[in-house]
Image 1: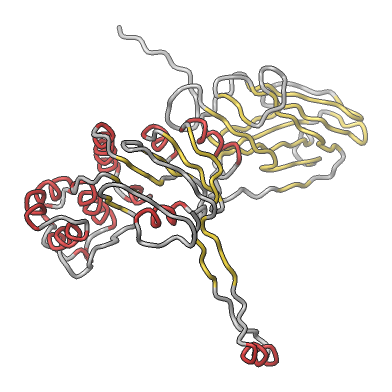
Image 2: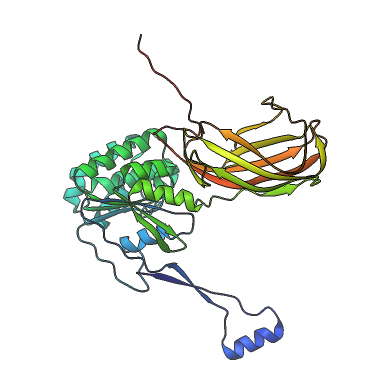
Length: 384
């Protein structure tokens, strides 16, 4: 299955070009395939997580499955009633009250007025909007929109539920309530497709995960394996950090190798296990008391750790010519994520930066156990 959009261009900006365009009825348009070659089956009662960077085609895929847009090529077949929560406020009329929108949405989803009457109180109670149910929804906050939309979507008791990233808008308490409802759906053998950037949550609730990038399926299968593949490929495109390099080059950093406990070069490391950084350098002259240092930041540029040979009280008398210096992180205490390594060599008084590379090396960490945050801090519990 594929979905193509025609992106309309503009007429030529020059007078001559515009005249020729009009005569030839030519316009510079181009085709954009939001999805291409997408092919998969979803079993009854299965939960499929859908992940990928922004612009990968995730929301387009859910729109196609929901029937709100049509494929350019291929076919989609679904069996059973389908309910959707694709975007904030979708299907709500802003001038109608919450009560009126429940009846409007329920009828769109195929419920009779009698069925909506029977489920009305459950919808309102789940959304926690008793005090606001007769207020026009145009006065609702984004969180209230999500509450009402999710409550209607799940209380119609569909066979298939499609959920986009809208749950990210709700507060923490309501998200937990939604996840609890999703787990109930799983027990009742409902079929669900969910898009999310919350990798840990979607990994825990999905039976399989589909990884999309640039409109194509990159991977489909075991949740842990596909999430690791997502991280390994560096598809988490929330914005790459800027790489910088400067220095006098009296000492120049050359090849850098990141190794695991077995001494082999790697890009992916297990939290709680060793990571060795081998730094090859070339000192073009005799350099007294040089200082080597490194720092690690996460994907949002937050400093996780930084140190150097002075701080670690490892004195280097002098260097000259080619050499190798290593630093062992044993154990590596970072948790799952994508990280950027910076390296530097400078004079002991910090006045001379011989060579510095910021955010130059990328590596991924996968967890050896489930935990929150970005640091793996060893701890022991004891009841006394």
